[in-house]
Length: 434
Image (tube, rainbow, N blue to C red; front, side, top):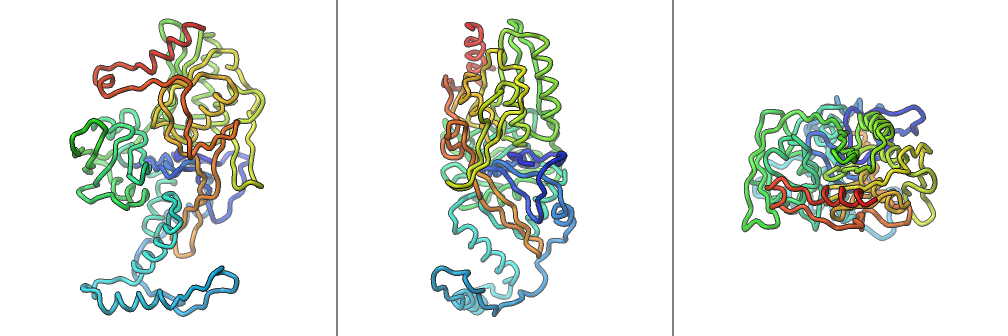
């Protein structure tokens, strides 16, 4: 099953594709801290969240550095290299470090080796293609297995800076005052310059009751500011509904995770029965979740055509069609989005926009639409590799472009402090004219 950062008590539905020794993650590298809405994935984007033997084994494997580095002198297999590469250079640098480094007695062979693999993977220049040593891979798998304690915010990279994508409602990050778009310059005093997303997540997450300090810069700040946040268990009910006084039915979806499909079905049925004058889908600060759930949501408005395309290369693609329910297609609809709307949120917004089923209001979405594969390595480490991208029905690349609103309306810090919501006000105004 494909998800975008929403990894909460992962389940595989009947008929899900069989995946051996790897997990497909649909993410733009954004990883939900504690909850790992990755989101990541975040991640990274979208993930294939199917529980298999890898998850079981990785979640119990002991992650240690003790031991030897084996097969040091193995010759590269035939046809592996397109250009001449002298692997003796690797060992030359290895020997120089072991001989000349000031604290060479503190060097650890396994750490050096995993550091080399990390550099190899990072040479792609893609922030969402990462190598995870056994310790990090184990923690990553623990998140998949349902162990979620953290601050309740998703992070990604924007302009090569670790950035808050979506603080979750009523979670520690939001309560501490973090906002979508905040730039994290340091974690517990350690600079995030050059830091990978997964490394940042590993530093920010931790047991409930413990504190983490994030050094934040925000547009409008004169200088950085430290935010002290107490970690806690992350519990989120992903769908909320409300009928306004002027008969507009509001469906707020905080993420597309394990409980979303059933909750949204109930919301859609309630909307249909109440027969409102219009519907608002609030996807602001929604970092994403299950692809299948995103298709289910879009299918309540779309009865034919495309929902989204998964593009591997010009010759290979998967096209996802609506499920045929479309109970809400005749209701005027507005979708609210902002800079924190990502992955599955962007799939829904893009699908409804391109199919002419809704007016998109707010700010341009995050742009998280790459597809990652998580490959297990036999020592317990893993490599997460970008393999594809998401396209809207009209062919727009979500990862590069995001979803532009039909009506651009910002929600400023001043608005926020005064409990004003001009984006919601604009949505109500549009539906009131229908």
